[in-house]
Image (cartoon, rainbow, N blue to C red; front, side):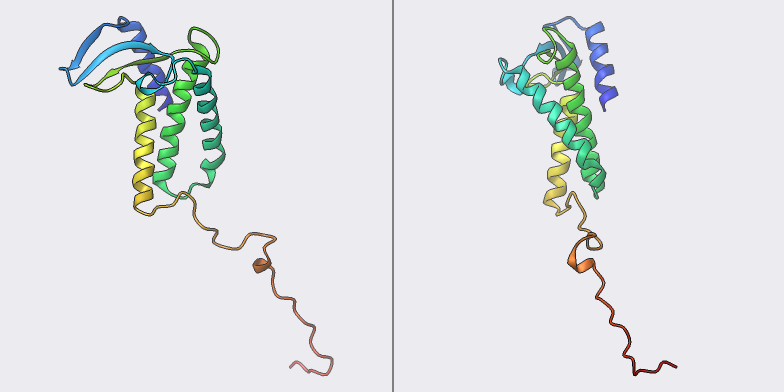
Length: 169
């Protein structure tokens, strides 16, 4: 997902003119290159650094918990969210006006919807996938199959030595 985001943003930067709409699928989906300092619906345009911290934190958390995910839906959701977070984080770290406050490249526009990119689509898809899994009762983590080491239930009962008077035969 990260590669798709980076490649499509590079294509948009090389091909599109900022602020000029082009029909892709009629007026249902248009190309419209902008540089977004905030989040969806232009929320938080003066707090770009906050989104940088959030995206970096999300990426680290996903990398830490991903090995423990027991559900395919949650694993795919985590991968989509990670790719999306890293895609937009890369813009925040490498684009103007500077490190940590860079503007995100957005270029896809639906009617009555904010302009977005592939990373945004991945994040929304992850949220929908994880919400659906949760509604179906699919948990992210499997319960431990055996008690953890150090748990009292995991310790074998102490064995008593055979009585001295018993004979074994």
